[in-house]
Length: 330
Image 1 (cartoon, rainbow, N blue to C red):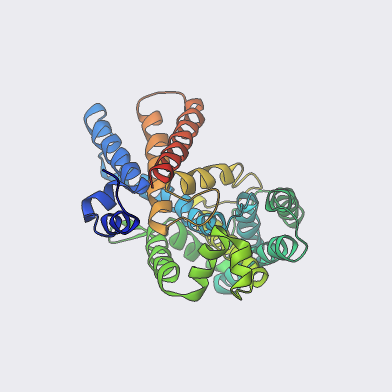
Image 2: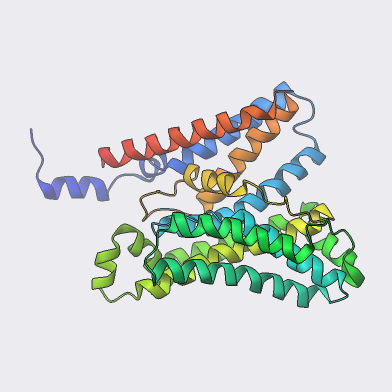
């Protein structure tokens, strides 16, 4: 017996919360991460220790912070391959300035300013010059890392001047047993969940990703919004760069190498649609958590970390396949 259009819409609108939850990709990714944690707890003696869980929480926070920015870009229908180089540029700017005797706060503002400049250049060339995001951000990947090399003369910096201990405390310290980068991630996630849901800018991001032409016709300043999207992505990478400089206690120009692939993987696994129009801050966090759990499990089980790319690639394919199946069913 065939259903009328009204019956189909009514059935969809009254689907119970459990069914809506089960239909979410991020739900299954979270279940996979939880099952992996439970399995590792029984298979190894080291996973459930306080020290290891602290390291897992700190390590995935860096990726998740940048993944929230990447999710915003992907939700708008774009891509940002320059985040890894923005991380090292930001870390190098704050290191060089602090080593020269400037305060942490002045150096941090300058580092975030350098990151925003990278995002501004990306956004202007993509939005106003109409150039493909892949090409522009790929070029910036090389340019930003080169700028970091020139700035530091390609040397390692480990002396951070009078505020040396403050930088190490902010990036590598903890409060109430939790690493400071995790606090930054939670604040960013709460703010962006609100922004995505309740602000015009957040709605414009998803509108542009769903149908850019329609967004233009409805009066959205698409080009201006695109510039701000890439600036936000660069800002999250700059923030992660500052925190990573404090965590590592030294900065080299190899910092953030190939990080863009991990970040994109975290966003996609967490539910960001590469065709645009979908993505959440929570999804980016869950995707980053799963990747870190995989990386940590390979180390604890004595498996070569060369397998990490195989696992992450498989999860990306599964996530995209799940997304395609879900859309075809809808």
